[in-house]
Amino acid sequence: MKEAQLHRMNFLRKARYGFTFRDMIYTIAAWYLLLMAIYGIEIFRSYNLDHRIDATKARLTALSTEKDRQVELARTVVKKEGGPAKENLGALLTRRPRWSKVIRGLSQVLPADVWLNDVEVTGGDDQWYMIKVEGRARSQQSLTDFILGLETGGMFLGTTLEKTGQPEGPERIFTYSLQTQPSVQRLINDL
Image (cartoon, rainbow, N blue to C red; front, side, top):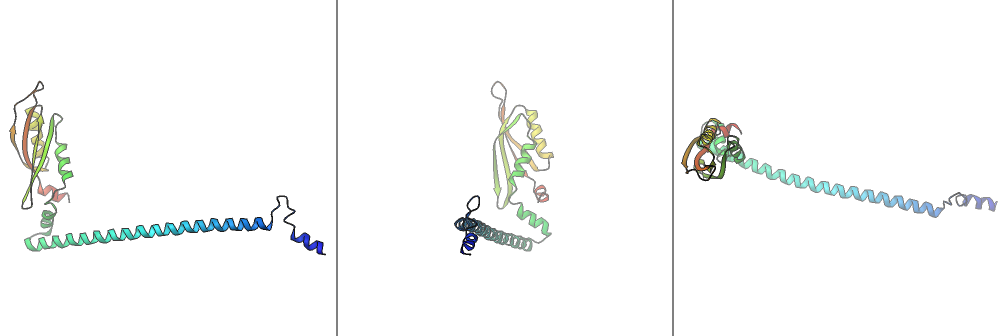
């Protein structure tokens, strides 16, 4: 009888690979450590996600505050100046044109043999912006095409040629200077 109990207790030891109680404890400990590592990763991921959510909420709050400030400023302008709200809001928003659209409009009508050396913006605050363009051109015709393209494109108004220089070098390239301004109505319509 004692031998039968001993045989029952040691049945695992006599197995082919000798799987014992100690091996079972090691296996359980390994599973425990694996599950704890997975749990730790999930806690870290949750903490990181909460941190990003808090940062996004703070950014959303800041953007909402800025939007409310801009809307209040627009309402103030509408109350002060009267008239249709779209025109006043458009005037407020277009005091600073979207320069990427202005430069894109300038470069779209630029002929291949006309170059820009300098683009200078003047004005602001009380008066509308003026754009002064200086550059070089290969012919008077290409410069004329450039000026006509500015005027007929609808993005610019009042383009005037201020001066042209004498042709220089073997290629007969001359300098020019012109002044134009972005169209307020076109920028309002693009809002």
